[in-house]
Length: 228
Image (cartoon, rainbow, N blue to C red):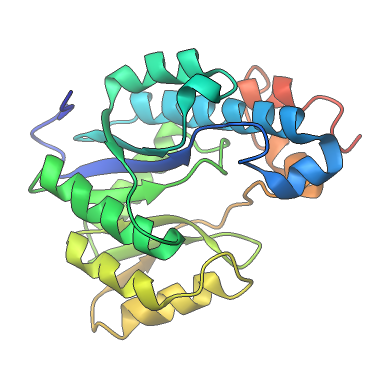
């Protein structure tokens, strides 16, 4: 289902996520708390993220999903929540290629929009933060939201072709954020910076992110006792 929601707002949201199948998501966290528990944390993060995006004032919502929801924790609930999104598959070898292709495929499905791309590791985001990032992107050609671990949690692009620069960026490294910023700047475009956030990879990250989430969020409930 194509979900364009506002003709007045030129910015859409692209969520890139993986089905929370035990053993296939949050493996660093799983080494500490177990595969089933870490998949439950991932499911909570995905659902909180989708809920927030559904409430955000954006033009369209796209979910680029990989993995098998039938084998995932909360798979039926995620499938139900995704009914409010344009759902596309992920394609490509490696994260960088999948991200670049996701931007291209979102633009093909819903042409004429800029897109803010986020993942499933920042369940503390709010609709107000998304709206602020959308406004920032409207003043630039690209927008990057740095993560405190050296990566990035958000990438906004006014032209999906700009995502091609990701193919040269090493992903999941301590300098992924700075390398991505450098790759964008080498294109000679205007790059804005969004607020820095923690993202979830380890038990220590869970503690930091949980403190930034709403008390009644799924993520808070799913992570009770982790790191205490």
